[in-house]
Length: 104
Image: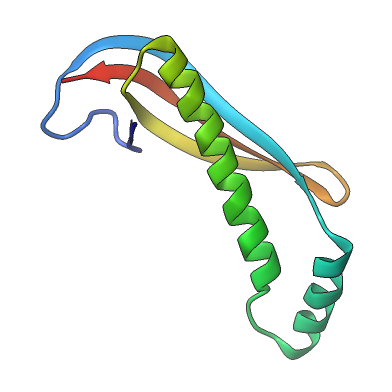
């Protein structure tokens, strides 16, 4: 699956447009990660536990978006975007969306 943030796939022509596809996941904090994060805020530095957690959540959301596009018969997603929002204290939603297309 080709996924781009542009409105076209360079060197390819859009033959068919299937419309909006999306994928999302809601990720909550982990008590063990919170303890490590609390220590990091004292000494400074990257909170790798949260970085890894959010990377996994983004990949899960992108995978779900790609699955939806494949089910429609698409082989690419253009104008892909990622957004996040807080759904409750300690939990965030990661959503990816774009336009499913068939390119040649």
